[in-house]
Length: 336
Ligand SMILES: *Cc1c(COP(=O)(O)O)cnc(C)c1O
Image 1 (cartoon, rainbow, N blue to C red):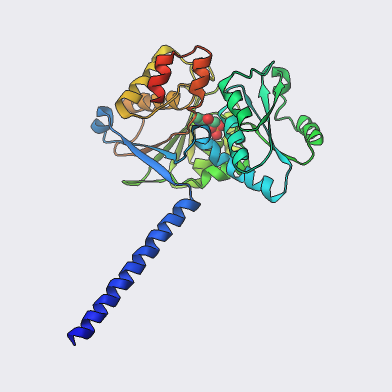
Image 2 (cartoon, helix red, strand yellow):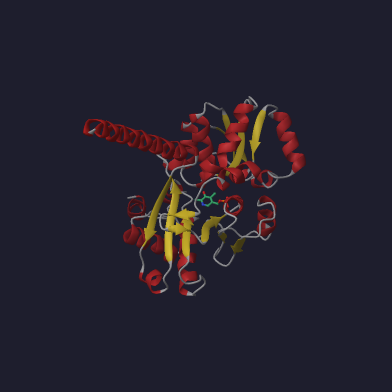
């Protein structure tokens, strides 16, 4: 009898072990399908006194070049190019564009030829972003500012498509319905301490904000505009398929896209010292400073769980150093 019982116990232990293995496997495979995420809680006296939680989340990624939101926005463009056996991908960006570099590296990883049309009068091969794009195998073509302005015009795009017949043309920033879909599948709605209330992102073209709102209908998505663009809300309304759970704040752009003053740079340096998290002043630093301004203005309901999507962009710091907009010491501190 005892012998039998012991056997059953053994069986139960084996079954439990197998179940556990299965469970672990399921968790792992889920992580591989949905982008694995990195969560970090921010500690700050303001947050404590207002009983707010602030979490920073980002997709885990080995490479600075494709970190953040751009890899999410590229996913379905890459899929489409592969499924439709396209000859390559062509896209647009400024001379220090996070999107161009993310495209160059993602295409290289997937053995897809790619072309980057760069807003510049003359290609500067020493520019660290363009240099990295070229190293990754991207073919670069300079577009004058006047030409670049036409990048979203249907007639101009149709002609471009004729010149590159079998090439997938990806809009600037990867912002299209494919880009929005990629972002919407990134699960940032559940923090390690429970359901998020507000999902916050730096907003340029609006694709990321639209994706957050679409993917998380039970959360509020909040975009901090880092560009001056009066049509941005309209674009986000379309991209989000008329979701209403998003809001765009345009009061924190300052002097315009890419412009920052010493106090914003200092905020990034202080934030790094306090939290060990790296920000840059073009996107994430501008947006994070806005978050702290909003917190101090009691913008968020007490006890809210706030999630800040760290959209990457740290490769841009090399460009700021290259142009002398930050010092070597500041660069080293921010990147450490
Ligand atoms: C592109 C980018 C954004 C803006 O994303 P949109 O989808 O264009 O609004 C924000 N942060 C970083 C670091 C980016 O590179």
